[in-house]
Every structure is written in structure tokens, then in C-alpha cells.
Length: 252
Image 1 (cartoon, rainbow, N blue to C red):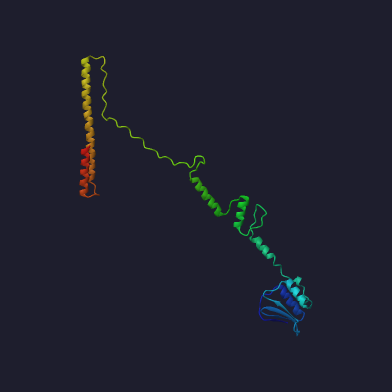
Image 2: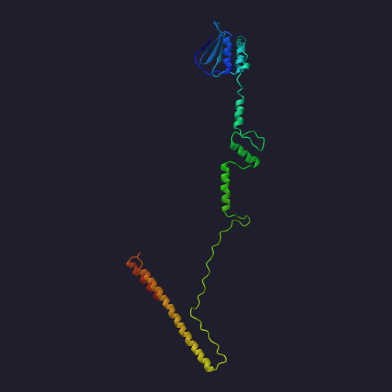
């Protein structure tokens, strides 16, 4: 007879013992913390208790039943109902989460970072994660953009900016008078030719001077006009600027 006081999950090998005890005419009582097996109307001390928090393993239960003399009464063979060994579960977990090195027989690593460090230090293999590849590409791009330095001569100096050509030396803007050759002519003719050439040269020089003066006056007129039409300054400032231009022109 079996009396249940509280339902709880029971291992298969314990259920097998309870069934064998019931078939043998023993009384089985399921309490909160234990399962008691005793002879019907048995005396004190003829009770066997199976703890429920936690349940003992099948070998432990068989040994305890043998010490109390209930193994022969129940006629139970624990080997037929033993649960699969629980020692295999940690091994499966280790195989599932371990990270083995493909380059040597080192024991599996628990974390992929440890495996990456091992391969880099022992086998010279760089990281193959997406983040490591991205960082290497960025570093390579920066190295290509930066100027290379020669170990013998040091860093490459910056390019020297091109210098503007030097201004040409000022030359006489007046036209040059070519003196014709007078050798072989009479003295009077040579003197007349020389006087004519001198007169033409003087006139030409005067004309060049007039042209230069005219250009200077035009530049002065343009400056005065620009000051007079400048709307960004007050009339007083405009007059002061024009007076300054006049003083500068007088000093030339």
C-alpha cells in the first residue's frame, strides 16, 4: 500500500524500488522530505527511509538498503533501473564549449579569446575575427597615406614651395635711336646727319616722357574716382583719402 502526501518528481530507480516494495507487501509512504518503506504493522526499527532532497544515487541506495536488510525483502536489482551516469554530462559540456587549437594538441580553451592569444603567441597566427580584420585594414590604409621615412636619411622633408621668378631689371622705356653709319661721307654731310639724328632722338625722348606722365595722371584719376564712388565710407573719410592721394602725387 502506498500513501502519497505530496507529489514530487521521483527518479526511475526509486520508483522501481517503491513498486518492488509494494509488490512484496511492504508499506510505502511518500512524505515531503523522504519516502518510508516499512513492513505492514511492523515494529519500531523496521522502517527504511529514502531522502528526497536530494535523492541518493542508485549505488548509494543499494548499499543503504543492504545495511538495513531491506534489499532481500524487496528483492530489487538496482542495476536494471539505474539512471544513466551523470558524470558524462560535464564532459559533454566541456566538449560543447571548448575551443581546440587546430595547430597543436593543446587542451581545449574555455574562451575564444584565450585560443586566439595562444595561436598568436605560439604559432604566429594573427586574429581572424571580423573586428581584428577591420582594424588591420584601417592600419594598412593609414600606413599607405603617411609619407615613408628612410632609416638612413630620416623623414622625408616637406616639399619646398616654388618661388616666383625674380622681377626683370627696369630698363629705359624710351625707344633707342640707331645711329646710322657715316663713314666714307664728307665731313659736312656727316655733321648734318648727326645733327638730324640728335634732333629726332630728343623729340622721341620728349614723347616718351609725355606718355609716362599721361599714364601717371590716368592712374591718379582712377584712384580719386574709386574713392569718390566708395559707398562704404563717410564723406569725411572720402575727402581725407583724396587729400592723401594728392600729397602722395606731389611727392613723386
